[in-house]
Length: 104
Image (cartoon, rainbow, N blue to C red; front, side, top):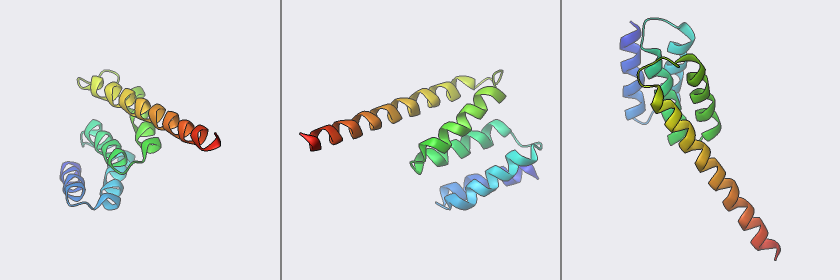
């Protein structure tokens, strides 16, 4: 059942039903059943990232960082965290530059 629900989450994501997909993936994670949780977490982080919700994407990825340290694809989590942190830093820098330019 959990694998079918994981597939449903992917289908909803592909069909651009992001809110429903988020609900499906969160439900799988909360149940902590037999579905590949790493994939459910990663899909949830990906949706948040595509929706420009960097904070929630990072929260999910940091949770993965503590929960899946021994997973064979753990490097993906670390790469995504680094990438999103760099984007957040660049956004802050750009924002500060715009504020600075408007002052002078």
